[in-house]
Amino acid sequence: MGPARKVLVTATNYSELCQEAKALFESKGWQIVENRFGRPMTFDELQQRIGDIDAVVAGVDTWDESVYQIAPRLKIIARFGVGVDNIDVETARRHGIKVINAAGRNANAVAELTLGLILCALRNIPALHQSARQGFWDRFVGEELIGKKVGLLGFGNIAQKVARKLSGFDVQIVAYDKFPNLAVAKQLDVAMVSSDQLLQEADIVCLLLPSLKETRHFMNRDTFARMKDGAYFVNTARGALVDENALHEALTSGKLTAAAIDVYETEPVSADNPLFRLKNIVTTPHTAAETYETYRNVGLHTAQSILDEFEGIDPPKGL
Image (cartoon, rainbow, N blue to C red; front, side, top):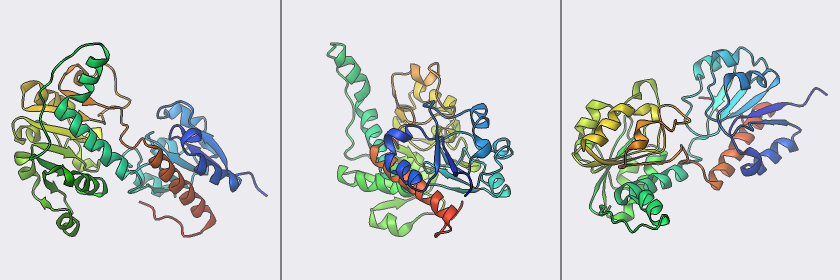
């Protein structure tokens, strides 16, 4: 009998939040190497661990040629989430490494935070929370969600759940998608429109597109300029979709009333990011998918997919 197979888990908090998935690996005799840094692992840290690893449950670390070259046993990378923009999928394929994700497993969590960020931006909830805790009695006149037109840039799993959750708020919903699901749009009473029409008409624009080469800086000076004056902007997708300098200009010029973002061009984000000096922005640290339910669902999905791949039982479809 050969040595135990090893899985490197670079997603954080695995022992605390993915106990069932960890137990599943251990029941099959796998050895688990965990990320104990509480952040994405660097190349040097991966280099010290990847040489005898058979599979990876990947967080948002960078997976590219430089890593694949020193990972002779690696057969599969299971992304602990949906976006694979941190993984060079084509190069992985050339190295015989399968890449899969957990499509749909975190959609509800992200959709719920998207809704929460909309309300926070409209009513300035985080700032009022801090003010009240300091003993102040500040007033802030915000806006109500009722009657607003909400635009969803992207209409995949997450956006569809956002639309469903917004249906009880008496709003009008429009969406743009390169490959629109017209049947679901009709079911959810969502009007599919062009990206230009959405930007021009929506009171609240929610960015929910995938992060691809062609969508990098989808929101830039030109697209922010096309937005309705005084609109709100929410991003729970990926930081690379937004030119942060252009967002800063839109917020300081008054083009946008406020923004709420969970993701950044560079992560972890630096404390000196100019956006953090603005009063009309709500920020969270890429935490949209961080729920117990998501960790359980994604943990079990990625673990079972890896085990299936090695046991030849209905192996998961690669990207």
